[in-house]
Image 1: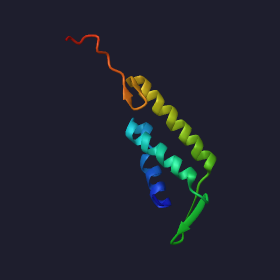
Image 2 (image 1 turned 180 degrees about the vertical axis):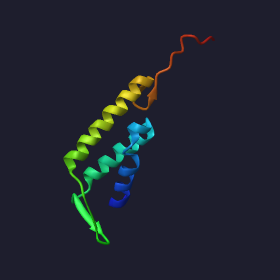
Image 3 (image 1 turned 120 degrees about the horizontal axis):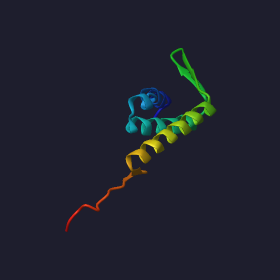
Length: 91
């Protein structure tokens, strides 16, 4: 992904909490990781300049990870796995 695509993914998925979307949160986390990895922290094309604060992005990343972990815990998911109660199943 180029920097413009990373920023677009960051912006498009930033409302994961308001939407209650695990998919958006996961995409936002990926965008944060990629944004942190971009160097330099500023740049621009066609007269448009963008800057970002790596610490602020790290803070947003941690917040999204905490939110996602809480959603997974509330739904019984462990990572990408699902916990199922099969005690009522018959053979």
